[in-house]
Length: 250
View (tube, rainbow, N blue to C red):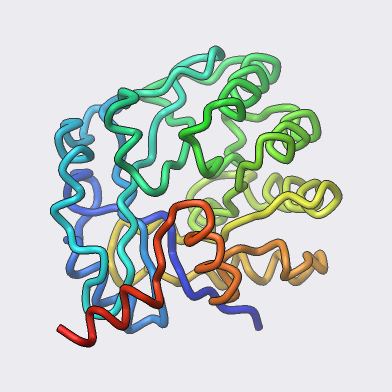
């Protein structure tokens, strides 16, 4: 059975419909085998999200907390088919990990063509790292067309384990998306979308689906320590092993 070593989609009490602190997330994540978590609270386009100052001040969180790397991130909302999102560029520049997702309060569901245009424009945004829970049936899109663009612009596609539980029709959609990611060799990341700390790293449902379709492990970013931290070092200039050693020496 595949296992993950990082969970890059975690919410805190800053999103008021989530119920754990950063420290609780770190401690539970570590207990569940995570060497890295990303704090990705909802951006201000939905009602109960934190003020943008929350994202601007994530630098207050140490990089290493109890030997767990903490990535400073956000789950931004896709606002329209032009690919507009709800954090300003100066804040995005200070983040390590940005997920772009559709949420009903920020954008009402429209047509497949509309959603596809939105994803094509999101793909061109250099600040976006990950396409979040795109298996949501409410925001169905032309999977093949968009996934080709995600490949072209080096975006990661999230396989969101929580979607299998919360979002009707999502499992079948996620399977189709995963098959296309396999076809076009698009990197995926498997996340919990945790809104409570004990769920961090609990992504067995999504991993089972990927095993069912014989998805290549080399395309799953967060199941291999060397692959994941190599990516973080190359793309984000964050050296996990150096920081881990420094934290142990303090």
